Image (cartoon, rainbow over all chains, first blue to last red; front, side, top):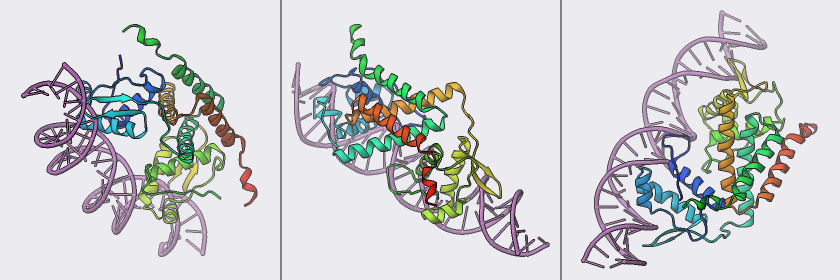
Length: 136
Length: 136
DNA sequence: TATAGTGTACTGTAAGAAGTGGTACACTAA
DNA sequence: TTAGTGTACCACTTCTTACAGTACACTATA
């Protein structure tokens, strides 16, 4: 079952927390292509939020090509496709790396530690596909 | 010479762009320990900003231990030191990785491509210390 | 000592983002 | 017909970002 959790008052906006977690669930195959997501109102009730906040997150994920919405039916995980141009992809990768690396280097992690941590997390994410769907 | 550039109206706040670039300059040793930074008013004039915006960025960098301010004299690159607890460092590393990885995985980069890109950029950052200070 | 330049700290103002609350409409499926 | 869906508004509040101006304590230098 797809669960997500949100902490209001954190440094990161709620709707962005939803985006992060859905992205991650898709990346780890916890959510497979075609899977349905909770409706905006249902998820809003679960998380004690306004439905507009959930809708905002879903809308951005649709824009990114992660989700696909069907009016009157629901929101579903979309088939993998590229929505950005090659140069835009590169630009976003570079910017994301800059932010990430300048942050962790400031935290005084060494390059080796960073590379290891990234490799480990990537393995966690993409290696353990759908292994939790046994207890359903 | 230390140059930095800022784009207003971008997705990232101006003061945060300053923080990112100073962090990066320190990480790459473009700015060495003890080096002075432009004064808040001078930098504000260069970038056509309010001095409060620059001061806000500097203040956060001081809080992070990247910079050190001397009242009446200026702001300087601080000696490397840790300002966060071990658990806080780990928490920040994890959060930064989550944001970074969910973002680039959504961009449809493969784990291999991501690891390579990170390794390459890390090498650029920490390998080419102060090599541009020849054309001064 | 005067003066200029420094960081810092206020106040006030304006614009935008984030989030809530409510309503409404078109669509789908039972 | 009815319930549930996505979507689109509007109004409102709170917080963040940024600007504008002023002020003060400090440092260095003439």
